Each structure stands twice: as structure tokens, then as C-alpha cells.
Length: 116
Image (tube, rainbow, N blue to C red; front, side):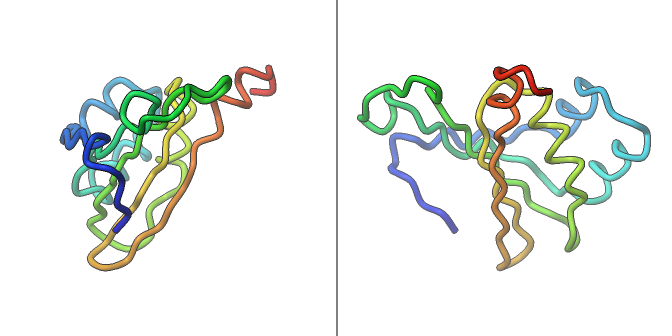
């Protein structure tokens, strides 16, 4: 498990429904949200305020989302869809039992450069 300073902890469980109801997704991807993901937790907010560091010019905060999986092998399109429709930088930590996978969102940087 990744650990960050206590001041960064948010610990808010985010209902899966909040994602797939607000995102533009296919019925197939919605089904994968339901069948593949057990829960999503906004675990940390990494920012100048929570880490006591200077505010960055291009990155002002990073959200850490823990995605607890029901089964091995999350469809990457779920991560991509959340990242593309969110303005924040996101570190996705996907876990199933004792296994972790990390995925960083760089979509907003690409969007800002006009490449999306």
C-alpha cells in the first residue's frame, strides 16, 4: 500500500454510480463498472496545502483514487474514461487482495496542450 502524510488523507468513499451516471459511457462500460469494481475511495489529495510544498505551475494538486476490484484485470477504458472527463491529475491505485497496480492520469495536460 502507498502511504502519504496524514494531512493528505481524504478517505471519502465515492459511489460507483456517481461515476457511471455522470460520465459519457457505453452500456458495456457501465456494466464493467458494476461487475469489476467493488468500491472507489478518494484516498488522498496531494497539494501545496496538504504537503507543505510550493504550488506547482502546471500541477497544483493530484488526487489519489483507490479502486478496489472484484476480480483481476480491470478494463483500462474505465480508468481512461474517468481521467478524460476529469480536470484533476489523478493517481489511480487499483487493488485486488494483496496486488496493486498504479496508473497516472496525464489527460488534462494533453487536453491543455490542445491534443485531445
